[in-house]
Image: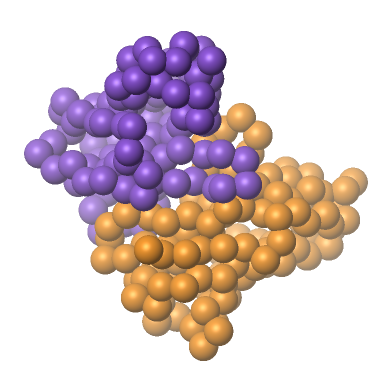
Amino acid sequence: GESVGLHLPTLSVQEGDNSIINCAYSNSASDYFIWYKQESGKGPQFIIDIRSNMDKRQGQRVTVLLNKTVKHLSLQIAATQPGDSAVYFCAENQAGNQFYFGTGTSLTVIP
Amino acid sequence: DADVTQTPRNRITKTGKRIMLECSQTKGHDRMYWYRQDPGLGLRLIYYSFDVKDINKGEISDGYSVSRQAQAKFSLSLESAIPNQTALYFCATALTGNTEAFFGQGTRLTVV
């Protein structure tokens, strides 16, 4: 089956710094890669996605990079704020079917 | 009101009991999913449904069953609960062709 994993389970950054969260995947057939944010006590929330034929996509304060050569995905958060503290999951989606999630990275923003 | 509602939010049950977790949505989405979340293991797919007459097993369906009673309702049952089914359960919905899934608030289930 698919394997979506994360390099680091926890990440601490200073408020105002940029954050980079990484993810490795194994299924080259995935059509989309997606990032979700899960705040304490809540369900995951969609942040941004990237289609497999793209290398980069930018949103509001977030950028996702896709390196298909090494099957690596990253989420960059600019000017990290306390409200960014959460667990971040990468997920992959193939042909609009089920979503497979990674194990998550816990981001802590230090004021 | 939440678009994806799970009931109950918390439940403690005894080993061997049958329990049902319910999910309803007002988003009009055709696809519904049940996930289980355990510390360090992320979200694992239990079952998913693409419409009322479609049910599919996910990664960890053993010990679980589901029912899609209507487009808006998708329930998860544990026929005979066991302690290693203690976890946080999430229901999610999505529209065919979209990558964004919408999650409920979760149900924390404890099997003693």
